Length: 299
Image (cartoon, rainbow, N blue to C red; front, side, top):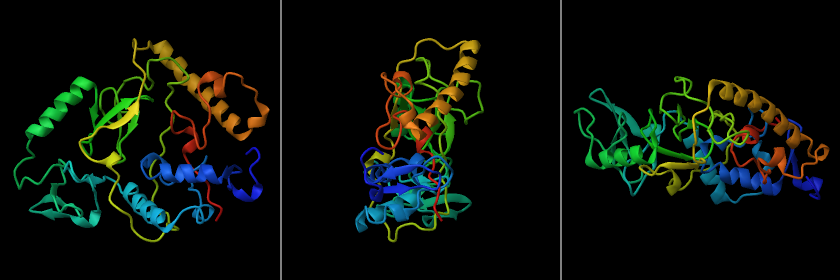
């Protein structure tokens, strides 16, 4: 923790410590990234909110409370209107003539709960011109469409394991449900920078959430705009031998990462953390999920 005063450090049950600036950063990140909601350290339990109670004002607490409820909801549905994109609460979803119908609480748009498009009555889900153009562009750009909520997802960096904002997991190469295909787990740009880091899941039943409700959903999560992550250009596909080697190196790399994070004073690495892969900046590694999975509760 460097020169940070012990009084300004949160001691977590898992044995790790986190300073105020890191706590602020990870809680702010959790507002826009479902994979970091609720914030965690290295276990499956969240960071107790008592550690951040005095770090945020009432407005932030209301927003956080709302986003926690949103990201903890399975099979989330969003308003398809370009000018809205609001998350539709389960209370606004009902059955109408045997079909699931939703009503946006913000712009009052009526939404089909099956295709996530504007309501089209009892007819089969149509393929409107706007969606057709978007899918054509997605095919050209290499984007994929979530099999559950139909959102368009773009990946520019990271592993082939994609977790959509609705919680669905799928392969970024073929679009199939995760672990339902034979595609490689990793990018083809070399390793260890492209190893598949485990993606944490949204956890519910967080009882000590902040009081209140929050404002409309940030524009970053709105419909028809691909969720963007970055990935280096892919050369050739790996052979089976290379794939197995990469998977073995992943385990070694993950173990070494934990050691670096837990015992930073025991290592001297002039090239940066893990041989030049990157450095830990505040709350986690740039690749995404390894050290940002869970924080253990103190109660």
